[in-house]
Amino acid sequence: MKKVIKYLFLVVLSLGLLVSCTSQKKITYFQPISDSTDNEVATIVNPYKEVVQKGDILSIKVNSLSPEASQFFNPYTPTTRTTTEITTEGYQVDNEGNIELPLVGTIPVEGMSFSEIKKKLKVELEKYLQNPTVSIRFLNFRVTVLGEVNRPGVLPITTGRVSLPEALALAGDLTIFGKRDNILLIREIGQKREFVRIDINNREFFASNYYYLQNNDVIYVEPGKNKKINADTFFKIAPWIVSVAIYTFLIIRTVN
Image 1 (cartoon, rainbow, N blue to C red):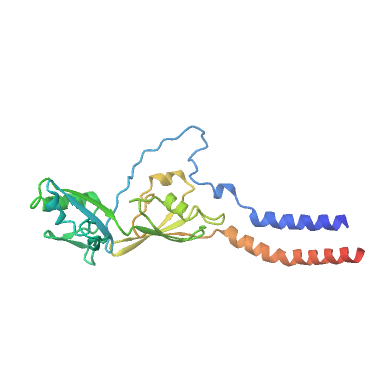
Image 2: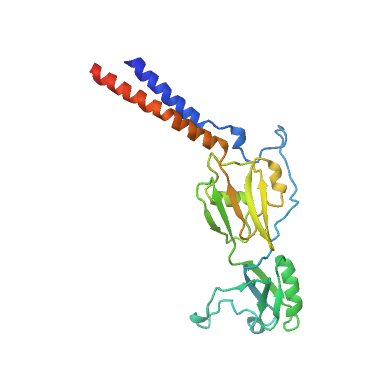
């Protein structure tokens, strides 16, 4: 009887090993280029640079030596005069890639960074204000993470910028079956949609142009071959496990 039970235990253990077996090399993030144990220092060659696209909603705040005059250019800035005037709306980039500012008029901003927009606005605002300054941020920054992550979904970003590792962490990290060496990033640039494959197993990823995400980026983590193999293995062996369990139960019942 003990031999039968021992046999059943070994079969179940073997099934668990088959299902859970995954190469550690395939799931380790940011692997070094060489096997050296020395500390590595990498220069940041691609600092974050936001790019404004159609449909983005921007918060634009104008300041100058005259707060009263500046307020005219801040229709979406919360005020304390009455609660009904407080608003969180912003400037939406229209289908032509423009925004409309009071008195200034139409300003093309599509494809520009915040620093470039600030310089352009400052030139226009100097016609009306003394020493104007401009601050800009996104109001609708979000990225979408799909596939083999623990919490897929749309992630609103409130910090102003986000890297791919940060977005994956917000999505609960990859599952054990997610392919870390072939993550798909989908990005809209003007009238085109860019599809990029990213390997986060490789430490060289930190120097990639896609380390930092842009507004409305989509990340898809596809399942690896192990998921299909493990699933197939389970469904092939499971009937045998059930049969052995039933057979063992019947033997024990007969003996007793």
